[in-house]
Image (cartoon, rainbow over all chains, first blue to last red; front, top):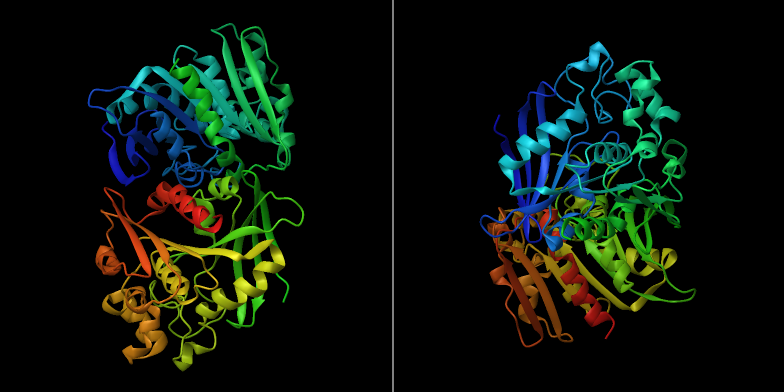
Length: 278
Length: 278
């Protein structure tokens, strides 16, 4: 299904677009943003997928992170999708800010009530990356990375590590690192996947890292030392292994906000550019 | 009256604050933001005042312009006030988005209905700059500049040129340059000052420039070529004189949005830093 243009703004040396499209994966309309730097005709560009945190739409990152200047500088396309299905009504999907709308947690739900629509994992990994993205941007599918914030940091780590053939570089801002052990994660995973915790493991970055055997990854993680949600995030559970290095930087005085994200956005683009353009 | 802290966030190498205070000038509570770069004890820093456009509060600039990275880099304090009195109700102050709340136009109103509160000119030039700012930040009153966007570009140009002893550097993004000749300006100036157009001249940058005799100023103005509001802005009316140079840059494809502002924010900080730190 072709994506429809919602808005277009010149930003640095490139254009910030918003599109909507009917998604077969989530069975509803989905909105996403994409920044495309100026480029030569026929030029394919490295591309990043940014996954947002709880309560966000596609827009927060676009308006508050200042990422466009770095995407422009490094000539990297950036896709930034929504955080859940929208425009459908499932009983309970708006009762809390950490479950349902704005809180898809990047899983494929198996609990019947949510299973039809809450398939954000497949939406990102299959539909958006492989079908929609190439239809709107000159994406080089061999040079794709992923990053995100908080719930979206969890999404970036889990999706990136489970699909190393698709995502060559990974980073995160204040990610939920060990969701199976914290209230946000337990609520979401119980709700979307049911009580059998063995089904939760593929959605827990710290657990995935323990058995990750894919190509070597160097993961950059920034974490604010004054983040009010530290007990939900547990960055210390992200243990480096033979196959995956973890550069965890604890940033004094920074909190969980977009002021924190914006302050280190340049470093994350340097990280991804170094790997994707090597 | 002491300002009360509303919020504080670490951002780059400095802190983004929001304060509120009871203003004797506007006879109501006023909210403003200020970014203070890290500095030595007793160090006084050059300072910029940023005036926002129609419908904005103190917050748009803080959240969407990405200015903090440049303020941090150049070690410049930045104050960004609200665009009108708030929290009072005057009949007609919310009927339109281009007059009343969010649209103070940086004038001292003389029409009785507005004259008590709508005194944004004095609020910026006297109260905020001279009384409030020094109470919350280590401002060097000898190194102060002013800039703004759209209605706030109008404010920056008129306030800057009328108070050269207070503001040493001036720049603007898509300013309203000749308000006495365009619908936005005529509506506001009639409403706040009444029909006698001789009282409007001190609030029209193009008119002020014609007779400006103060110390030499170099004014940087960026204007998007695809700005939907060009006929309200009239950048071509800003004529350089012996006492004031105008560098007007027409930026292809850019519109009136914060994507435009963010794209050239770095250049404006370079401009102000060059003058204030000379």
